[in-house]
Each structure stands twice: as structure tokens, then as C-alpha cells.
Image 1 (cartoon, rainbow, N blue to C red):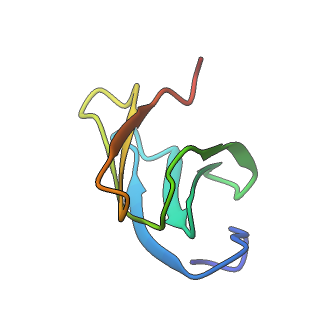
Image 2: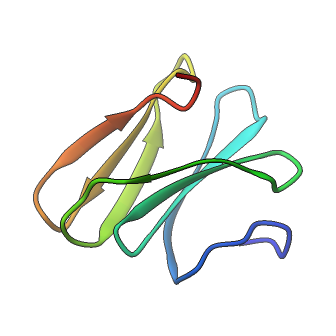
Image 3: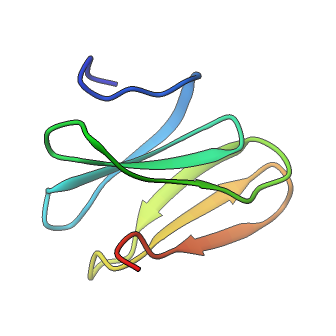
Length: 79
């Protein structure tokens, strides 16, 4: 993770938004979305175990995360 992007643990996966203006990452049981400048836009907690993958929807309106708890959660950063 570039120094401008602050996570509080080991980052397991990163996903760049289709527009290239946001970066989503997962660490521990959390998903964080940053803007292009590294400012945190939103942080999500909802998995009962570590999150290991994140991906943006092709239209950029949602981020999906997959955790070791067997769940996939869809987050909407702009709502």
C-alpha cells in the first residue's frame, strides 16, 4: 500500500475503482475505501473473520468483500 494510504494491519487485497478515483483494500475484518489522494472515504466492518478479497462492481457503485467467515458482503461507498 502506498505510504499515503493508511491501513491498521496487513492488507490482503486491493481493488481500483473503474474510474480510477478510489482504492478499496481489506485487512483484518475490515474493508477501507480511500480516495485518489489517500484520504479515507469509508471503513466497513461486518465480517466475523478476516477479509481476504475485495472487488469493485464494473459501474463503480459497489465494493464486494469475501471473508474467511464464508460471507460475501456488498458495500455501497456513496450511500
